[in-house]
Image (cartoon, rainbow, N blue to C red; front, side, top):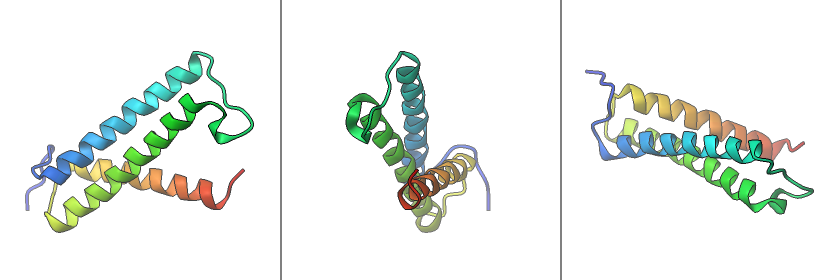
Length: 103
């Protein structure tokens, strides 16, 4: 069993690509907030922040599932796939926490 840095399978590459998209969208979200965008009474009061947040969550959760499928089905053993899957797991837990225990 060899452990590589870069993924060898297509699903592994997708998982890493989706987590990179997650990080880029997270930076975009922070730029929007720093530029003066603010939320309102509801989630969709500011559509720029709302849709950016939805796409952030979708890319993180998708990275988790593609990483899991790549690790289990294709026997992917890449450090970046394990890292993207772990970050995706944290995103999934955060989203579940926000749904189950809203504040």
